[in-house]
Length: 291
Ligand SMILES: C[S@@+](CC[C@H](N)C(=O)[O-])C[C@H]1O[C@@H](n2cnc3c(N)ncnc32)[C@H](O)[C@@H]1O
Image 1 (cartoon, rainbow, N blue to C red):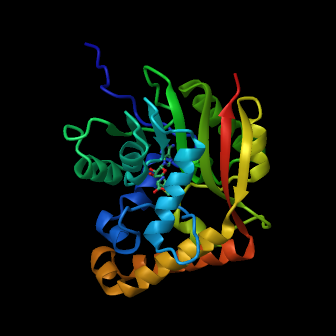
Image 2 (image 1 turned 120 degrees about the vertical axis):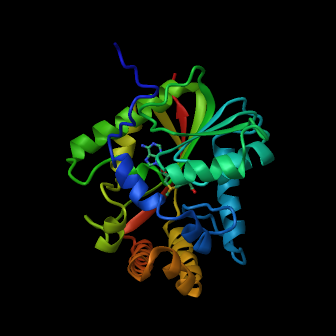
């Protein structure tokens, strides 16, 4: 008798699915206490006078515009979190089909419930890694926000990291139509060799890229057409998240315990500090598929 698995196990070159779930499956209600209403969990794009939600929506607009996603037939988000960009793509950019990938079961279940597929077949999310995702047809545009931070492992050498990121860009190249655009946002190491341990500890098995590694890894598959470093935007986003978590500290402790709340407050403060000082940078890259 042969046993054929319905779906192969999720494989990742970077953080394992267990490590990702340790962070993102903690509690949707906990994240809802301090993220904005859209549940976006990556650096916002601020203008003075913005609320957190306005700055997050500006960021979603920016990346969908950079990826030339308007009216796209098929759109992919790698690391789709709690689904804010997928929903924005179909509602505001008239994307006909938006596919999200996440390694978090809790995020997957949240998106399925908030945007049920039978009610809106334009949004689909799967617990799947970019390594294992082999669509039947290519996509017109790709966005990935705050996921590349998980694509290599702390034990990797610089050469191993570049090799892994090269695999990522090759897969994105194969999944995109010729001439298609990808908009990518990631924290990188900045001026320092290491970041604060309060940040590293909260994201097990994950290691930040450096800009040079991203450039080297993407050189044969993508042309870099736009690059911006908005590290101060992340400092402000982290401060805002921390302020909101502090204001709901007791409720948060009821959900996840005092110790976890303490660890998150330390991590948000340390992340904000690292972006303020330039220990971390925050890059937004617009890339176009080479032929
Ligand atoms: C910081 S969250 C960002 C979520 C969303 N992009 C946002 O801005 O709100 C990182 C996301 O990357 C996903 N992720 C990490 N490694 C991944 C992989 N190998 N393949 C697909 N998704 C991955 C996580 O599951 C999570 O959804």
